[in-house]
Image 1 (spheres, rainbow, N blue to C red):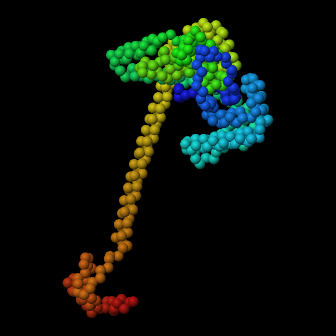
Image 2 (image 1 turned 90 degrees about the vertical axis):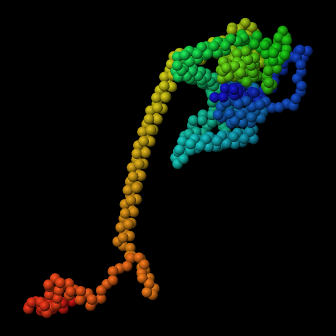
Image 3 (image 1 turned 30 degrees about the vertical axis):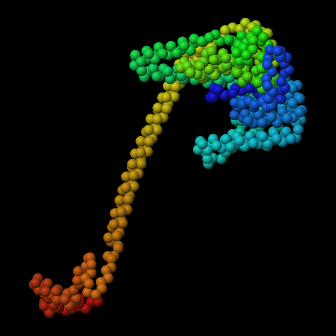
Length: 468
């Protein structure tokens, strides 16, 4: 979370008031207040509500503000009726041009949401899964997803109620986030101490206590929104005599956008002097995240005390009423963050147990992933071994095939040149072969011709010789 960003300023119709309300006339003593130099008028800067649909919200407001009928109804409708949706019904009476533009804005917003849904699905790896946009658009309550084409009364009613609810929950969520920040900071400090030996740990603890006491040693902080606090701003920031403090003049000087209201940003700007008493960005002991939280605590406190209709804006009338209360004239002392620990000991214990469980779960996942990796590596080694065996078998079969099937290469001999390489043994002529057989038989003492056979065998041998 960006602690320095602008805070939310109100629900959707409250922002309409910011845009379309005229500044309240304020009586001023011109002998005591210097007239500022006239500069070209500029439209008020659009205030970021912090909502994910902020742009759509502001564009709807801008076009509704252009319709005269809607502007008049807005001024004559109280905040409770607005929240209950009575103003939304006036949408049926706005001009055709405005309705057409609102239809276009809604179609653009629906397409934006569909693109976000598709992008999220792609990131999560579901590229091939068919999307049910109608089902997924249900999570966006600020528009009617059943009708993605036209902006109707129900759309304005949803936008008002969603913005009001989301903005009301903002401070609660901020408190929880800051509490987690503080607990994590303390947890990290404790974990660091565990890594030190006894002597180093003692020094670290002494340094921590020294910084804590140094941070707490600051001038008295005025109660936010009190007469003393505003007079200090009047004197130091505005350069005016505190004895001449005038609430109306003060309101006019610090209503920077001239809309007749203090929004949350304008209120927070009033506390800068008080915060400078506690925090200095050059000091080791001062945490700037805590400074922003202190600023928001002050703004939230003043809103609770002064904003009587709970519209997250302070009108001139509300401001003047507050300046007459006892709390404004004789306020209690303001307890800063170091006097109000953001968490209890029980919450810290549960937080550390949760962190320990998360660490244990992560370690177990790491072990499981390592086992899976080892198993995959083992399977890969088996596959590699099988691949090598298969390659060797294929090579062996190829060698056998080349030895049994492939004929010897032919050699062409020219003239009386002797053939190169392997030469087959010379073959005997039939006559030479027959004579060689006779010599072999004579050496073995066996008959060499039919005539040498005993009587009776010569005819059998002759018959066999004549066989085909």
